[in-house]
Length: 117
Image 1 (cartoon, helix red, strand yellow):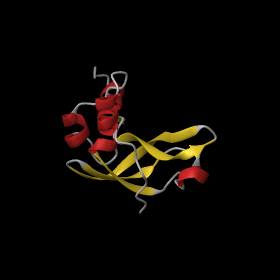
Image 2 (cartoon, helix red, strand yellow):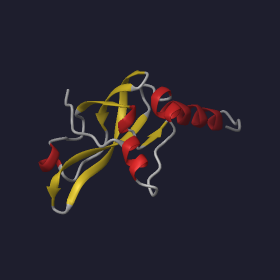
Image 3 (cartoon, rainbow, N blue to C red):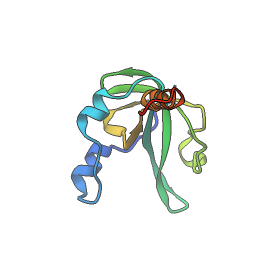
C-alpha cells in the first residue's frame, strides 16, 4: 500500500475564502466501501503543476480513516508515482469530494423497479 503526500482539503478551506471543503460529518462518517472519494496528491513543480486530483474507490472505512484504490488514469505519474489500481491510505482531511456508490445503486434499482428514488 502506498502513502502518498496528499493535500489537506480542510487546511485549504481555512486558508482560502475561494475554496470550500465538504462538511466534517460527510468526510468523517459517511464514506463506506464501494463509495468514491476525490483526493489530491501533492508534488514538486512538474510541467507547471504541483498537484493532481483523482478518484479513489473506498475498500476499507473506519470513521475518518480510509483505504482505497486509485480509480482513474493519472497525468503526472512520473512526478508522484501513483497509478490506476494502486492501493492508498488517506483520512478525512484529504477528501475534496465524495460520491456514494451505495446510494447511486439504490436509486438505479428503484428506477428499474418503477419507483421514484
